[in-house]
Amino acid sequence: MTTALLVIDVQMALADVDASGEERSCPEAESNITRLLESLRANGAPVIHIHHHGTDLADPFHPSLPGAKVQPFAAPTDEEPVVIKTNSSGFVNTNLQEILQSKGVDQVVLCGATANHCVESTTRSAGDLGYNPIYVGDATWTYGLTGSDGVTHSAEQIHSVSMATLEGEIAAVKKTDDVLTTI
Image (tube, rainbow, N blue to C red; front, side):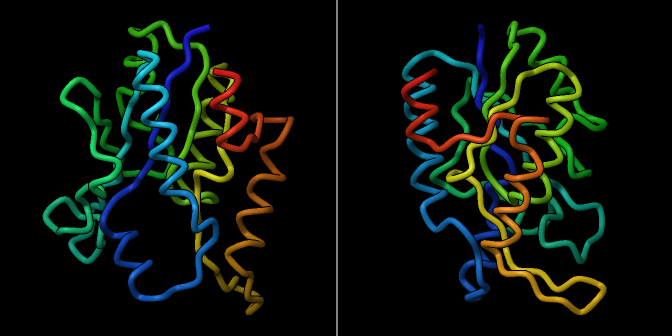
């Protein structure tokens, strides 16, 4: 089985959110993403970076703004493709599937941000396309939200629900240590 690592939206706009003090889940995500990158690179596995580019000038991920830049710890090497998306899923209107097919990939390991948006959306698409996704729960993070009903949900609650809705039916949800010992 050929496994690829997908590193999703680890960009400066989210570092800015963190710096603002907003509540977030999984403070160890960056160190676990670093571990995944180091291990899969050392094993020669394909690593693909997916970056979001907002289409609205007010979007902090707009390519003309500093928020669109990658966080340094997750910077791609010269050999690693970068897929640019404008939607939540890394597969929609991108060449991600072509890249995976060209590398003979049949399983993807997903990490990055945010757990309940782009990582979850890309995981769902990967499952639908038959890529046997592994969602690395402790290498993703998210932020608290208030719904249209006025109910506030903590970052930990949202992250937990995201993992629960994916587990078993759509993806295998694993911890970094489990991924590193099995891949």
